[in-house]
Image (tube, rainbow, N blue to C red; front, side, top):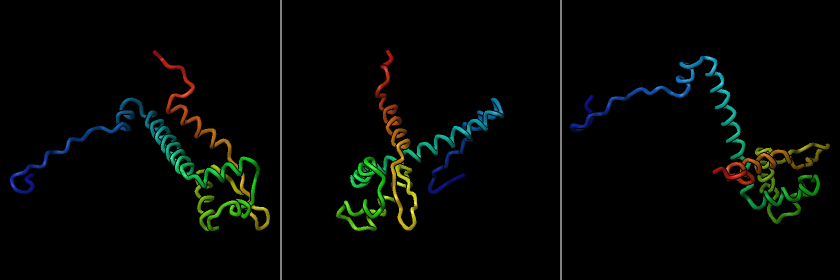
Length: 137
């Protein structure tokens, strides 16, 4: 097919995707492929949310406060010179990253630290930079 003044569009060569290669080898492997993709996508997106949440100094200060003890949202907000909507936005990002959790006690939200997610993020960083592993020759 001719495109424009004398230019020819190259024909498109169909290459098999990884899923098709797995299916050709073993149909049951296709299911395994999708499980691996879903797990890695969830893990990567979840870790990205955690790292984005940890990037802000105010959110890190909130985590430090919650490391000492559980706190109601109002007490957290009173520790900062920022407006309540700003602090609420920080708390929302920390909740979405699953770094903190909120329990409702009447009309009050009491926040507490989710230590397991912090541990997973730290271990993922250590693994990515090969910290704490023996160097292989």
